[in-house]
Length: 490
Image (cartoon, rainbow, N blue to C red; front, side, top):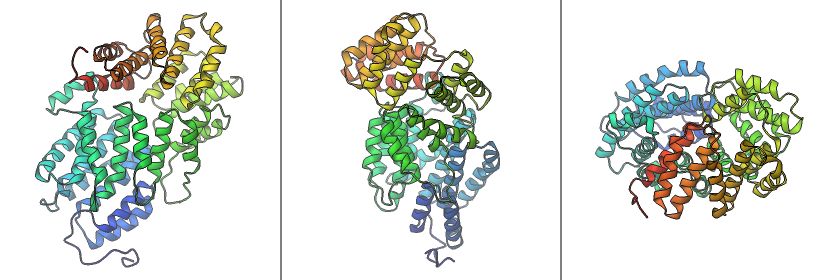
């Protein structure tokens, strides 16, 4: 069996990333966990007590939990963390993989804990991971994998919202988004055995660019131009499709998702891909959206995205069936899932309001999200007289116009529209006012007017939107962090 799997014998002293492990790593990124386990078990018989074996096992648990989100899996797999760390501590302390593997396992579990709502536990794991990787970085400065873990933690800490900065100060760690990017980017040029970490570094950078730097284009370019030895895995294809949606490019997302096949029975089911396909169709105002969103709702057993999926299903009913079941579906939105993510919170807020969205504004919003800017603008222009009659619909219309103008690089009119949004003071809790402030901050930052950029980022943080507060405040905080070393006047 060992010979068939191509694992060489007589290497019990080997510690670190063995050549056979590269194949296991690729199988894991393609979610082919059963194949990966078979290969790993064979490697462990020949080269026991290698810390990388425990990290690769943890990758499987991490992705199982992060993608599947099943509480029962969390309870079952949590015990593996401490046992793997215990075994790692019995391996050679002179290897650069000794502290690296424990730090990376702790980082992975921190991300899982955040997803399952265990914030304090997650912060403790991030702290432990940081001190381990910082010590390893000092001991082995040329060991590239250190920079991936260290850089990602730096970026996370640098993007902490203001209400959590006390924790960063308390543990004595200075986060820095730009330094995090620089560290993780250095892994992209890895040679030798460290090349195996390039796909993960790409995933980390994509997350940082989208969530902390508001630059999905840079993330998409990075993924598209990456030289991946074995071709794009399921996870890389997911990242590309996700980034296409973030860039308002539903057509590209559909092309990627339509050619992403999961026919291997050993692969972990990735039902969120079905939801993404449904969302891309909805942003194209295509009725096929309904079947994919319904499939996701029916089969997904995780915690998140349920409320937002019901919201999108209700939108399908409103746009394609006249809204006959809108209220019924939004009632399910209230009852099902949890409201941890900004999108789920926004869906719950809409369900509690109990009023249907304006169809023209909804169509324009979806078309904008899909990248069909002129079609969205045409709808707003045709409905402008009716929408201008009420302050709320006028505010939403101006916000959507501002987003379209900004995407079309008509900055003068984008600023005008965003300022009109902020001039309507009747709805301070609406997320559009906060996001208009964030985008004005971005615009003035690009123009080099750092004083006004800082003013609008601070204004965004002063607002308390009832939807998307966490992500909007994180973006404003990240913007202020980027301005931290800029001159006060320009």
